[in-house]
Length: 185
Length: 427
Image 1 (cartoon, rainbow over the protein chains, first blue to last red):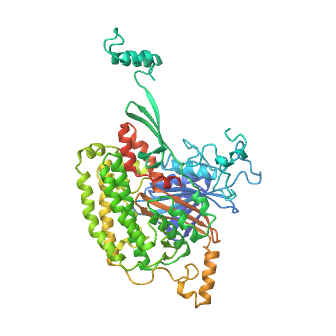
Image 2 (image 1 turned 120 degrees about the vertical axis):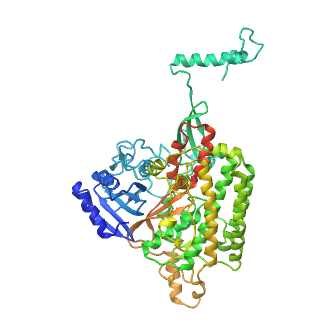
Image 3 (image 1 turned 180 degrees about the vertical axis):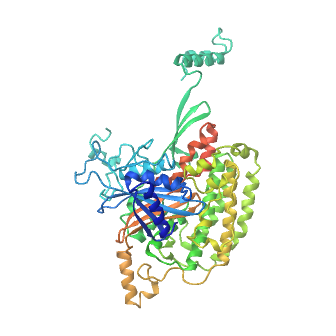
């Protein structure tokens, strides 16, 4: 990973070509992170991938996190890797929750946080973004096939959000199916 | 289904007017296809799985076929999703270990290392050298174990049933070793934050030495059975080739990437454990077909045996777990005499230790590729988020590229060589 001054240089260079794309840098536990403007995340990723001298061609992982009660609430993390230099840099985009304060409207008409999809830049992101959508309800604009991946298609809710209860849902067995009328519908 | 007229047409002697009854059926199919206007192609969509022995788990494949040729493959996953990542958020840090072990049920030591290593780095905790060596030892045994299960089941898919028995015989020896050192055959919960749970018992080193002596010979026997086996060669040679650039685009890691000639192994380039102390090689392939993938994994087992014998010979003396009483349970014998030890024990068991607010992505090399653990700590004694970047999940994206244009029999071979573990994919 780039050292702290190297990370600052990267941040400055990105901001030189894409004004205001990098908001902040973080360097802790031997890991470097760029905190970027969610609207400009593709600019930052493309710059890191294509600039000679950077060449972060490999997207090792993409995952989301919910920082409730922090604000902005959601984080999308891109773990970039340069295999030749064995350097990792993590790019983090923080998203506000557009539904904050509107109560919990699930299903139709729900407002979801949105970010541009990076499948064009890194085809490996296809499954990762589907997973982030599945668990956190983050909509990736321009994703070729944004459906739930691990949960059933008809599932309602975003279970890895911090305000999603752990309690669970009743499981249907033969001994209690009479308690759930018309379950077969 | 053929209707009665068709059956009659296919039975010679029943319809005196048709000279060659099978020709009549072909003509009829061609006529129907011409009426639809798509030439003589017929696309059939077949559902493979979720319950099928060749899918190595509960994997569903929606396959579009034209005759025997695969036009499209769409994997459908999630059948064994158990919400482990969510459950982890409700447990204190040390109680998360058994959960993450159960994701990929063949590489439990690797999940433990990814998680414990991540938490240790967040805490800034040093792991004593003996614990690091014991971790390497168990992880490499685990790598052989995982590759043996892969080899046995994949060879079984390709018709070599005896391979299954041979591989599982050796796998059982490894599980016996695990049972001896950790008390459990699978899901051992042996790694703790700060080190390992217990020192190895007397006699374990000798058993490991005996295993290391025998295993290379066994691997040679597997190789003798498969390397130049004509059926195996026909099934694997030049099948499922994906270019190296495409693999990197798709984020593929592990033996699948190495088989295509890219010598990328985190054990060599990263210092998460003292792999630098050991002399071992990274096997790479040239073509990247099924045969290369097989040879790479076989050679990896030999290299793992070398690491294990070096680790057991060079095992440093000293403690096997860190001495930080705020994180690590005090030794049992201190509880009877020391009030402080009792307090620490009580605090750790009831509440657990706290991790200062921070987050970290921690990758290691599992038998299937880059296994990453991402932990967000919020300052409490429970993690705010535990995410696993499972190599099987990412590698599954490669299946389409491997299979399209090939035969359906090759799909089985490709899936076997992909080595997906559905517990890891679905988590």
